[in-house]
Image 1: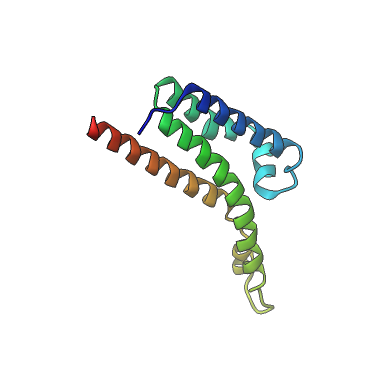
Image 2: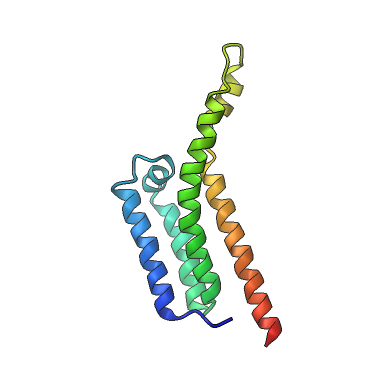
Length: 135
């Protein structure tokens, strides 16, 4: 597998920044993007810091998959999470308890985002291990 170029990482950094900019402007009314905007330090800690650490340590494949996993996970978590939430809300009946109603209103966007990110990271670790094993 050929090594990822610096240009690829710059493009992915641009996509990350574009996603965060979109979250602050046109997507801030969406649940997960609004959550990120309201808690601005979380994208710095969970998205940008690991990306930069991986780039600095020259783990470009893993850095690229981290960026793609973050972007895909944000969109998937927001829209799939809302779909799941709406389906769960439709299950609410008048005889349900308050705790169960509250549980059915939960938006699983963050969990989907982090799960998607972890799948991409596992793929990246497997690819890195596979290329090291070959050489």
